[in-house]
Image (cartoon, rainbow, N blue to C red; front, top):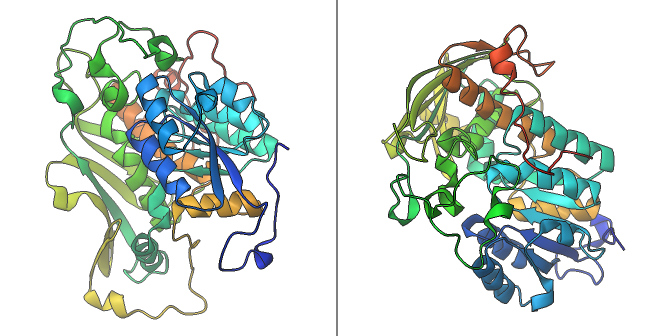
Length: 413
């Protein structure tokens, strides 16, 4: 009963979903992103949400009502969800410091996994997720959903097939100011933990810290102990597109340098707010990720010897404009087609086929981010061995390769 009924795609047809082909989904983390993800899965008639888990009682009760679940299907502890034999797959949208622990546990429990980006909070944790998914034969889709955007795919195909000449540089623009929700400054004093919120479970494997509402829910992103700002938030999306267009899904940059790094001088918000990070592949283009308040520059620009392509979700610009009339040749590289990130995941769960953003690809995209975070923290250039996934001869950088996990939490597959 732990695995869904597998029906070959040839018999699924184009209309209604055949009986017995539903995927029983549990949703872990049902705040803003998690509730949106859950609704997207509920829009697929092949999905039945059977359980909801969140350490915030208000979140889980609201999500439970949307999914039309009873109180017995609402949980505070994700381990109780993974113990259910009627759960085929889980959607995980929790703060970054929890990603790897839950993903490894889900794979070990025999559940397929839709996991929010970045795949993990450090390079070592990401490798552990990949190992667990492979060991237990699970399907994983990371939430880097631009791989399911038609225009993003088209732009990457132009680049991959040389229609802008030789690729020389990739510019990645991300927001240059924090978007803090709730009007918090990060200077708030310790507060009592509100009723209905399991703060100890929320902290989980992260270092223990006094409670203040300023550090929780959406705003965790500005606290370095949980996630280093937009380097791993927007960076996870855009650096993933950069590696896709460059044909570098299976490797990482080998030289990384961060400059113009600015943080707030006091309070709980200590993640980098502004930065410029330069990456160099062993054989390939230079990548520059920079923060900017100019929203027109948020996205990925591929620069070649004969033109350029700018991609951001449904925006696709190019020079020369004649790229838009390109007719692909039979010999051209064509990239994996997914027109809906959520449906692609369910397709793969049912067919045991491929996802648009599988574990290994998502791990390299997250590594891209973590390399930038490490260079920003050290304030100097670092060199990385892409094959060994290590920092040879650099003990300072190597110490940041894998985060320590507090308390009982382990990456045990």
